[in-house]
Length: 278
Image (tube, rainbow, N blue to C red):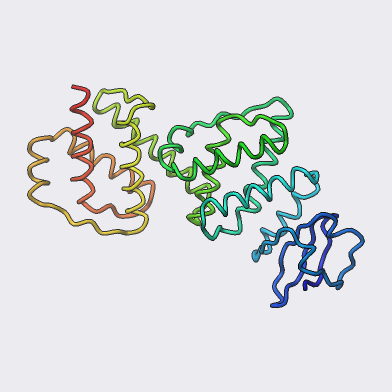
């Protein structure tokens, strides 16, 4: 049993569970004519989630009047798809962040507006599992609402999926995507090459850069092969110096130390890439 604390609309209310924890309850007509303090039985609840953070709860409440019943149900079911497909405990902020994003995307579409996704290809390569989930979510939304969201929305939703799974903020994820794009620009400029975004070389490069960034953020120590470092420094000075230039950019952006061993592995990757263009 749940105890009603506040009715948000006919289908959504805030209640208190048996542990005196506030929960969001969703069900068709669950809030109709309900009064504060009234009991709600479990069989009336279709969906339940917890928003422990007061700010997140208030932000969610502000979004509700902007949605009709069909859109709200679609978004809630979309989050359920993400939870089931990822088989992970999602950061509770996904309820607010994804609701806000899908509401904005659908509203934008109805007005004939479209926002381009500058990181679509990078997102697909960096987060392939999340991207597949994003494809399923967009397909579900399109069928449920009889609309046609553009392909770029798959990438945006994939980032929200990654954010919910990894517990990283969207702003940080976007910052890392921007950093990778900047690093690739430097690589292309220094090696005087142009890497096709559709090529396997591009995918391998951005994944290598992503894993490097992840190790730096997690403070993972990488053993440095000194003999290989000296050999690479002597044999491939262009790529070795470029690797250090990239590392300095990472350090400035991430505000974290990058272990010297990363320069060795980055040099080897850059040299293999450079050989393909010679």
